[in-house]
Length: 285
Image 1 (spheres, rainbow, N blue to C red):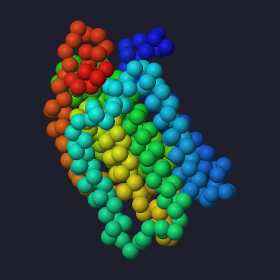
Image 2: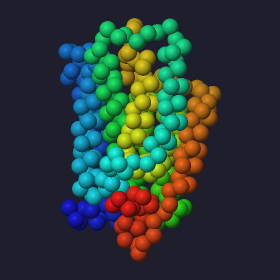
Image 3: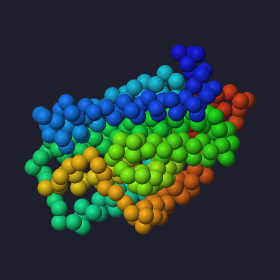
Image 4: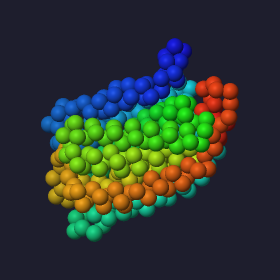
């Protein structure tokens, strides 16, 4: 394991790309085909996602622990959390993300409690695996490489966030989104990545980012549990105007994230691995 750790810390960017290339495809296995006859496509799709993302979350957590990155990745005690209130912009965005349902004639089908529970668990699993992988694992590795200076912290956050954004290319490869919609998601995914990274570094905890990620995604997909909704794996497309509006509306998350980062101090040291941890996180390691 020590040789593996040494290799990962020596080549963090390559290691992160390998981790992503292994983990993400393993959350895309077509298990719903086995469960559709018994549950129907929608519930089978949700349950498949929950199981795969849940298992991979445990695997990524194990990897974080074995690499000694638990505290750097935000797996800290509640007593060590700071500035949790900084998640507030994402709560506002989550409410706005649910506005389509609020303003529509469609109503949630409260009679199907199983479907509602599966939807909630699905987006808990989405928020968990993506935050564990990109903020709990990839971000600390990037900080070990660049985080010894203030400029380096921004580089580490932007690189890890860009990797997060590009990971959404999987939606195009899987046929769920067209190229324009996927490209838009890659850009605003990077915005979210910067904000989530800033939350972790300022809060000293990964859990506000997990919660915010879950809440935003859930609120944006409540239409799927409305009466008469016809489920499909193909997601809605967008127009050029729609893409530009979406990016303009989400740009403040990027700016707020960058603003939050100004209070994250670089560490000082003699060049060892712990040198490149932001102040606060470095103290916990």
